[in-house]
Image (cartoon, rainbow, N blue to C red):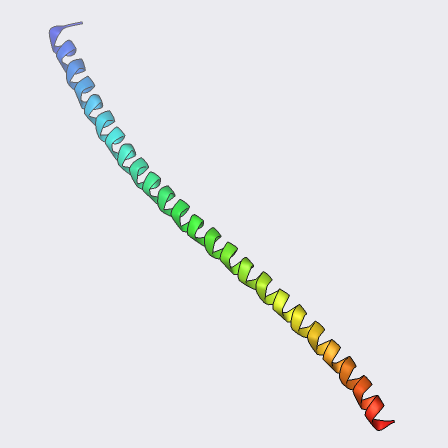
Length: 89
């Protein structure tokens, strides 16, 4: 190998090193963006899960009130029917 060829190889290797460094910097930047997006998504998911749990609690409490109110209404209706039967008799 002549000194000229050796010098050309060194130049080409240096160009390749620069291209690899540039590519790695791009990949590193894109990975940073992906990590940030992942963290943001996790935060949004946690907030959505908390909101869903709060909503489930509210729905359960509302169902309990509806069933209680319907039971009271049925009892009052039966009591009113019995009272009407006694008054009308």
